[in-house]
Amino acid sequence: MNLTRDLEMGFKTAKPMDEASPFTFLDLRAQFRGIRDEVEAAIRLVMESQHFILGPEVESLEDEIAEFVGCRFAIACASGSDALLLALMALGIGPGDEVVTTPFTFVATAGSIARLGARPVFADIDSATFNLNASALAAAITSRTRAILPVHLFGLPAEMDPILEIAELHKLAVIEDAAQAIGAKYRGRTVGSMGTMGCLSFFPSKNLGGAGDGGMITTDDPVLADRLKVLRVHGSRKKYCYELLGMNSRLDALQAAILRVKLRHLSEWTAARQRNAQRYRSLFEQCGLLSDVVLPSAPAELEHVYNQFVVHVPNREQIRNTLQESGIPTEIYYPSPLHLQPAFAGLGYRVGDFPEAERTCQEVLALPIYPELTEEQQKAVVTSIARSIEHAH
Image (tube, rainbow, N blue to C red):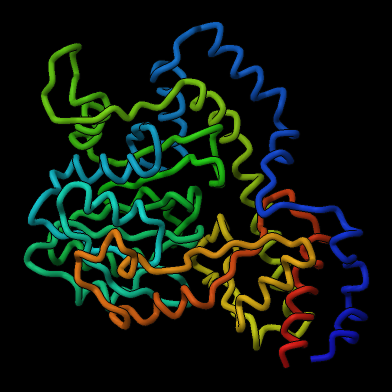
């Protein structure tokens, strides 16, 4: 690799970060500047109505999300973590039950299972996709398994056809953790529409993010939809009458109003993320880095929405330090798999149990991918990585 030659082939415009426009890992201010008037108008309407919990704005958002995902029902709640918890509660998951999921994900995925007294059972990942390996999943099923909880990690759909086949064979529910993947498609089907239920997060860093926490459960099952609506309001359908042991997990009308504005722009933002991902691919190829940097998997039959652009890199800490010195932000998702976290020590897993997940945690680095990211900034990212790798060679 010759960096000077690579710069001549198209990187001459990439300025050092002290000369280029500085950027953060995710620039929500840039997003807000484009929709400020719409958001402020929506907030004013809610303030004038003084209807802050659930109500018409939330119902409208539920209808719009259901249509967007392609399912019959969408039930709003207070967070993506609560969406997972409520979905499991609606199935009656509890002590003695097992739910199979991935160790390479955010803690809420497995934490929701454990909080109900059930056992999270981990299965290893495919390191190319970061998602559940179907063969490992099949081997993890036991007589106590009640559900499968696949994650559409970083915006790439999990391999749903084999997962659904395994679920059908063993009569298991499937809860899709689509917190990072709203709008992603698996063979033409939108995530959140394929399993028994799907769970979305509206945390501010998500592709569709609110001004705080928020979540949604999607389903085609009217019985589950009704049960979820009861569970999210303390198990009550009628005031002071409690049918179930529920919880307080209601979406604020202010959040719903903001999310309804943003939903109108989501397809445009998704397309921008996808263009930025393609530009990264072109830049890494131009710089001769494809033998050193493993880019995110993007099979033709799947639509990746790039909540994160996560690469495998050699000498990760050296590369990350070089980027930091150039003023370029990065993140690590995730530095340790869940089976090695202290909170799950009681499950009895050990180092080496899930080698792909463990290796991936040592190699991955997330690069900025937000819609407003400029070509200049992306060139600076790739140039800095190229310099670090050339120096190491």
